[in-house]
Image 1 (cartoon, rainbow, N blue to C red):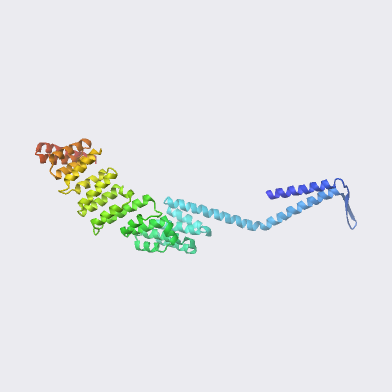
Image 2 (cartoon, rainbow, N blue to C red):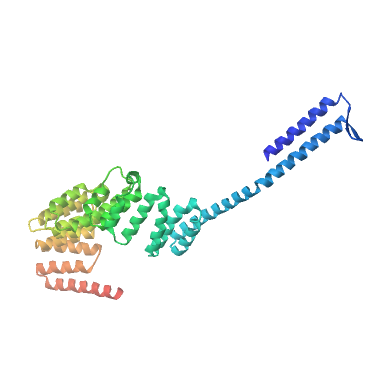
Length: 396
């Protein structure tokens, strides 16, 4: 449009210059053809010449436009197909995320008609078919990716996910061995699938190693989660010694060491191996970071006949730090019962009941009272415990 305007202005300018140049030179122009003669002023001739040029110029442009019309129509159709393919890709992606897998696959088929969108459409189609548990169709979609070398790694990752979902862990690990070195280094998806494959294979040592790698694409939160799973897996391996578990605790990242569930799992594994001093040490060290009432029941389980006195001193120290709560008094009461310190046990259970009464606390109080020879008081405590059980039954 701008070019047309420029040409029009140029022509007007030329006409103005010609008119300005001829204003002092009036004359006429004559044409003779056989017996015909046409005469006109030079101004009229100039105007007709200009008009003739303009007419032929626009006729030429019209001719060129008509000649180019088929190719323009073809380009318009290609653009429409491109837009339709992009819209289908968007529809397939949204439908896949929303769980409408059949609809997603139908949209992927539409997008696959356009070569520029066929690769991504095949990935979406494979994921949709796999989600419908139609493995044959999913594999057919993935076979289409052989025509697109740039999708080689994407195909492997999708095949790996399918293998994991089908519990084919050996195949998943084998597939991951064939990805490109660049993907191994930078792909978060590759790392996630590798850890999942090792976890499903119960290769917890490898999971631990992957979760603690430096310069990896896995986020801190993901490392923490996988390290917790590695600890849970490793602690179930009865062949691992208490020495290994102690080293495992020392190697825990701070984020994992701050997790109650991870520490509790490790402590229970140490208790199972009768490594009671190590279990108590882990609990006491964990309490230095922050107060963790969830670990206190295991602190009682880790008690031995020669450790109760030191454990009670530790309970007094915790109480002096301001942790005057029911779980701590319960723990102290249970430790006192183990050493038959009935008077102290009674005091701790009564304080725990004052803070948060429960059936187990009344049962502990009854045990302490029996130890003191207060049969009536013990029976009253047992009655209170039974009342809690009845209330729990009625409300459950």
